Length: 349
Image 1 (cartoon, rainbow, N blue to C red):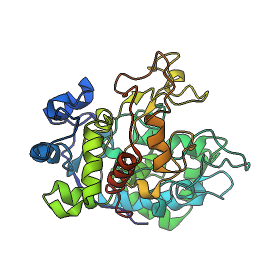
Image 2: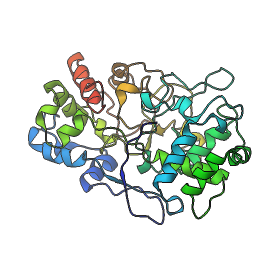
Image 3: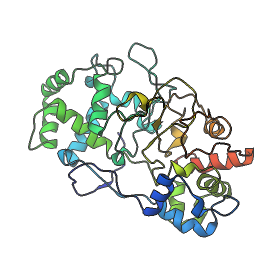
C-alpha cells in the first residue's frame, strides 16, 4: 500500500475546517472572482502571485483529539484497509473499491454491490480528506471514522458485523500485536479501534505533487501555454474557482450544479435543502486517474464534464448561484481548460 505521508498539526479539541486565506474566502464564499479579472474575464499574469498563494499546499492537517495519529496506528490502518476479513464473506476489502493505482477510486461508473448489481453512486477518491468536515457525496458522515464504519456494515457493500470482525481479528496474534502497538492506552481489538485505525491511515492519503504545484512554487515552465490559458479560464470566464478554490480544488460545500437525474443527494440528509439535489464539491486532484466523473459516473471524459457546464445545465430554481448560467466556450477554450485540469494530476500532465 502506497501512501503519501504528511506532517500533522498539533492536536485540537475538535476537527475543524482549516482557516483559508482571506482571499480564498472572498472567492469561495462570495462566489465571485471579479476583483482578480481583467475586463476580458481573464486572470492577468500580474495576478499570478496572488493565485499562487491561494493554491499553495497546506503542509499540516487537523486531527481529532480522540484519534491522535501515530506511525503504528497508520501501519495498522493500512493493513486493515487491505484486509478482506473486514467483509462479511471475506471477499472484499476497502481497497477493493478504493484502489491506490486509480487514486483510490475503482474506474467504474458506479460502485459494484456484493450481489453483482450496481450501487447508485460513483466511488470518490480518498485523497485529501483529512481537511474535510463532511464525507460521502451527500455529506451524511461527519467524520472519517464514521465514513470508514458505514461501508463495512452496509449490506450491499461489505456486509460485516464489526463486533464479529473484532473477535476474529483478536484471534490473530499478529493482528493483536499491531493493535497493542497502535493503541498503547487501549490495546483491545474493538470495532472502535478498527475504524480509528482506518481513519488515521486515510488522513495520510494526500494527492502527489503535480505540474500545477511546480508552477505554484514558482516554476513558470511547469505549465504549457495551453495549460496557463486553461487556468485563466478556470479562475476567470469559467468561474470554476467559485467552488473549486484552494490547493485541494474544493470548498467542501454542497451545490446543485444543474445536473440531470433523480438522485436527491444531500436533500435526503439532515441539514440538506429539501428539493435541491446538492452534492459535495469534489476535489480536482488526480483527475487523470479517476474517470468516469460526476456523482453518478455518467461523464466518461473531462471534456464531457466541461460540456455540462458550457451549455448542458438544467436551469432549475435551486441551481447554485456560483454557476455561470450561460457559459460559452469554444473548442479551443475547452481543450485549454481540460489541459489545465490534467496539470493537477501527477500523471497526464
